[in-house]
Image (cartoon, rainbow, N blue to C red):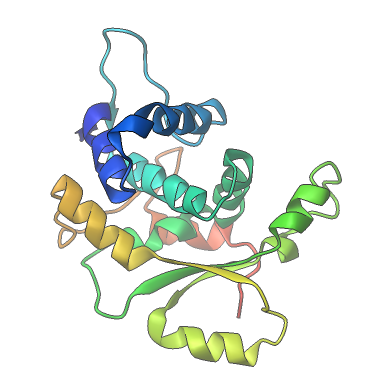
Length: 195
C-alpha cells in the first residue's frame, strides 16, 4: 500500500513537475478526483492508502494528460478499455515492451459528446500490443492514420523505480466487485481492437 504523498511525489517526479508548478499539478489531481478517475481523500486528518491498481490508474491518467487529453476523455478511455489498460502491469517486466495504442479521434469525440449514438466503440478503438508487432499492425490497417501510442512497459519500469515495486511478484488486479483477477475480466471489457 502507498500513501497519498508517496504516489503524488512519484508521479510528480515522473512528469518533471517543477516546484513552482505544484499548484497546477495538484489542481489536475483534483480534476481527476472530481470525475472519479482516482480516489479522493477521505478528509482532513484521515489517511488514504492506495493499492497498486490506484497507483497504475494515477500514472495512466497523467500519461494521457501528457498528450493533452482532458479528464473527461481520459475517463472514457478507462470506461471503454477497462482492464486491458492494466494487463501490461501484471507479472515481471518484459523485454518486448507492451504499447497501448488508441485511435486518435479526439476531435470527433469532442464534437459528438452530446450524441451518444455516434460516439460508439469503433471510434474508441484501442489495443495493447507488443512493440515487435506495432509496425505490422499499422501497415496492415490503412485506416489507422492517427494512433496514440504509450509505452506501458516503460511506465511500469519507471513506476517500479519510483515506488520500489517488485514486478516479479504476480500482481493481479481485481474487478471493482472483487470477483476475480484482471486477466479473467479483460475479455469482458474489450472495446474495438485495433487489429
